[in-house]
Image (cartoon, rainbow, N blue to C red):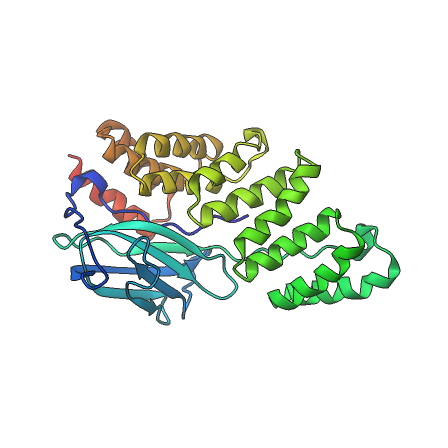
Length: 317
């Protein structure tokens, strides 16, 4: 599964954010500003993505905006303190996180990459289903490929009556539910697979990714820990967990996961970049400098991370 979307506080401990203050339903407005850019995993802008900025614990209290043709968005007039940010776009896995807004300092634009909802249809000849349900299965496959999540779910539910323990069908149902935005049912389907086959690392990885995308850090990490590290080949899963720890100001835990990402893929710059941010917050200046130098060495020259790395190196002198 591709990497999840990420929102990272910029410069971390280098700047002091304005202290959060208690709020009521009427006092969320202030002088703070948030802006960002939303892209897919290849860096292509996602137009029309919905960005919701909410006071934590109050789902209706805060502004909503959409990205323009370049994937950019801006919200002004926010009070200082923690905000919950939710990003949604058709065909992509939704994501959410918390972010500290300052009314004193203007943060760099937030870069957020969204992963597509995975589409992998079960093959009729591999399901062991009787011929009379193959037509329903084919109908579900077609709907899944076209991202018609509700139609796919309905078709697969008919098939599941005949084969309630069939792993490919449970997996397809999980993807259909998740496409509809029903994380609870998606995880329920996947756990039916892992209950029967605890060594199904692919199902555990999907459970972890879905929970982490929803910001459910403890549950997502518990699911990830079911998977032997030797079976994890994508460093982004470690980066995603580290980012969630970072956004909760748990920098030591974040650094440990970025270590895993760097060890798994030492030729990729992402792990170094995020580990450098965590090390700034931990006041590990030498390590942060080393990480940002690796970013400059490994990343494409025009990557935004290269520009950031140079700024951080200058600030760390």
